[in-house]
Length: 162
Image (cartoon, rainbow, N blue to C red; front, top):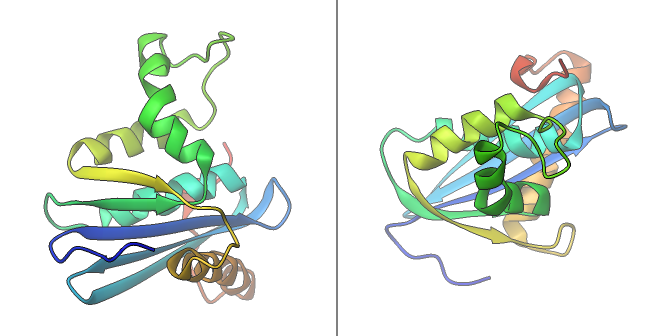
């Protein structure tokens, strides 16, 4: 892992699902200038991709001002979707190249809006490969499922399947 620069916000996220679809959780670690904030949430019926998206959405919503930084995810779906595919989707009326409606459109639109308010670079890391903060985000995501099932974490309804 590269050394973090002082004035950048670093966001590390992960999503998890017990069954796909099934109960899911998301986790995020935000780091800035030596400070760290951890976030997590869960949904009773969702998909892994929805949890990956919601983790980043919730992390960006936690920011109180415009910032620059790095978002690190182990989801190629999210990284490729927001940095590449989304341009074609918007141009094609939120349809894929095969003319099918884009899955999770409402979350993609929300993420697109939030990303436009900041200046982030996107990085992908291999999941479960020992990246310190990716592992923490994974623990938050899987822990959120357990807390949600136990009734100790309120449900984040934005991630529910429609």
